[in-house]
Amino acid sequence: MRVASAFGFVLLTVLPASAAEPVPPAGKVSYYRDVRAIFQQHCQGCHQPAKPNGSYVMTDFAAMAKAGDSGKAAIVAGKPEASYLIEEILPGKDGKAEMPKGRDPLTKVQIDLVTRWVQEGATDDTPASAKTAQIDPDHPPVYRAAPVVTSVAFSPDGSLLAVAGYHEVLLHKPDGSGLVGRLVGLSERVQSVAFSPDGRWLAVAAGSPGRWGEVQIWNVEKQKLKLSTPVSFDTVYGISWSPDGSKVAVGCADNTVRALETEHGKQVLFMGTHSDWVLGTVFSQDGSHLASVSRDMSVKLTEVETQRFVDNVTSITPGALKGGLMAIDRRPTKERKMAPVPPDVPKATPQVYDEILVAGADGVPRLYKLHREKKREIGDDANKIKQFEAMTGRISNLTFDADGKRFVATSSLDGKGEVRVYEVESGKKVVCEKVTGPAYAAAFSPKGDVVASAGFDGMVWLHNAADGKLIKEFVAVPIAK
Image (cartoon, rainbow, N blue to C red; front, side, top):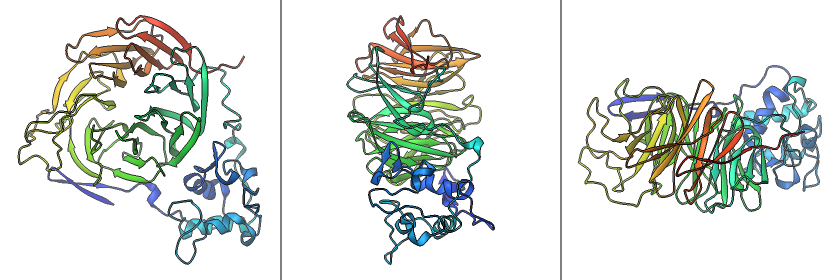
């Protein structure tokens, strides 16, 4: 149990299920119930079709018994002592194991489960109803209809438009004239995509609902998977990059915020003070803090180095916000100093000014100071700078342009959607035309002249950011004939 203090009261947060040991079964070990989850959490990130380290794949049952580069059979039914997989996961005298590579070894209970399963015949008891068609880079998804699009992003150089699909991210030419790549991974659902600040990498928040969450890092030029890291036991959301590209952060359905270092996928931040799903994250401009939004109607600030919850950015007065928050972005502004911080404000508050934009169920975009400059008083919303005209329905995405003078927001209600471009200083808005359904995702081109958006009906719309005129629309995925 994690104990944290915030504004004089104590928060108790139960650690995620991943911290608990599996309970050994009394009868025969089941691959589907007992062993499969161990492989998913600890092995498949590096042994899957998109990243077959050692020429060994563990996402396909038949492939698991085969030898990889070692030339040794990985699984010999009934003979754990002859199975190379068992040899690799057993710790040596120093307590370290060859696999999982670069990570903590499996626990004794996990090793015993896998060993017993091999000893008992290594049978596949996956129900026929749970078996699906093979989907991997050599067998990409086949679409009979366009899927819901949850995220879009332009590369920093403007050469690509990334669009979330089913089991994959599709890389389009920025004008919608053609598909140039398909990044097919393990997770069924892709929730958000984000290019690294230098454009070399694409981060993906994904997962399979109720089973696992996954963070993927792709090499954009080579279209190769660099990293696949399991995170919690449900889909993860709202991925964001630290300014230096060394970390990514995600929100989780277990009410936590996580950050991982991008070289090896090691978790470097865990914050558990939200009380509902966390749907968006963003780093401060110096990377020292992380802001997160949740269905619990709050924006919370965490210090990255210490993993310490610092502050509620928004008001903590009940009823001050109407409904959960789903979207967040930091305003790109020139670095400038804040006003002197009073003695009663948390000492960790940096002397750099940041602004964040948040929105959610009530359809109202609100601009906030990220860091508190005055003592909190009951009932105040002192960090709020301004709010903008409400959109119809809930806002699921908002994004600034490169210079922070405008932002685009998407909304949905009762089968209809809207895409708007707002001027930050004046509050003036431009409504994008011919949006044909609920809108869930939007992004500015690097030059800020084009807005790409998408949503429920699987169409991608390209609009002129200045006047909202539709330039082009196209289906996000190739449709089978």
